[in-house]
Structures are given as C-alpha cells and as structure tokens.
Image (cartoon, rainbow, N blue to C red):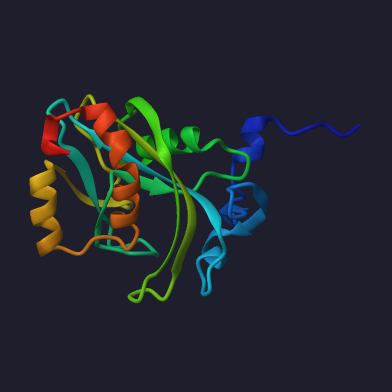
Length: 195
C-alpha cells in the first residue's frame, strides 16, 4: 500500500540534484527544475528568498559570498539568499539557510514583500530570473559563518553601505532586493542605522 511522504521528506532535495520551484509571473508554482539548469540562459522564473538581518543598532549584516560558490563568488550581498526546496515555505527556507550559512537563527523575522527580476551575470554567464520573497529580521548573537558559503561578514549602517557599494562589487540582485525590501526594513528598525 503506497504511503504519502512526510512534508519534511517532500521538501528535502535528492542527493544528486538540488531542485527548486518554477513559478509563473504571479508566483504560482508550475513545476520544478534542477537548480543550475534554471540559471542557464535565458533563465527560468523560479522561487527564491532574500534575508536582511540587523543588529540592535540597526546595522545590516552583509556577507561576501565564498570564492567557491558556483554563482557570483567573492561578491558582497545581503545577509542570506537562496531557494526553497519544492514544497518548502519561503519563510522556513529563509530561516533554515540563515542558520546553515551563518550559524544564527533570525529573530523577529517578518515578510518584507516580493520582487520579480531578471539579472544576467556577465561574470558567470548565469541568469537570475527570480520571484523573490523578502524577509527582514534581527540577529541576536555573533554569526559563525560556514566558510564554504561565506567569505566574510560585516555590519553596516546605510551610510557605510553606500560607501562600500562605491568600493566593492555586489551581487547583481542586491540593488533590486534592497530597494524592494526597504519599506519592511524601515518598519523593523525604524530610524536606527539610517535606513
């Protein structure tokens, strides 16, 4: 007699391929695809998430992506980003990946909107064509980054971020997700950090 897989089992990737959800323009799931294949030109619209965490002073936690990353290695980006497994709620995926990449559980994590974008990455030849769920929250203790995922971290105010963006390379998606998340960020941190 067949049995239904548990919700957890349905969300876990197969060991040989990481799968993600393909979506339509409204964010409705229409299928699945292997992660790398969804990022090959011209790109396939898929579900993603981006997390922005802040310390008690309202400074944003940024990460420089590890040099070994298949996509956008060595560039600065938001606290954490990734893709839910098929059937995994974006909120759950955001909390899971933040813990995996940075060794911290986000506090007061809340939705900060969604944004759809299409950003080719000339350096890698890959394409970010995503329906991105945005989240903002707080971090209560010092992160312990996984060196295979994160090259380095820093906390910045809005002014410091502007200065860093003039000096360093950021992920292709960072300006888009930051602009879309700013209302949710301001609702979370208020005037702290200058956001």
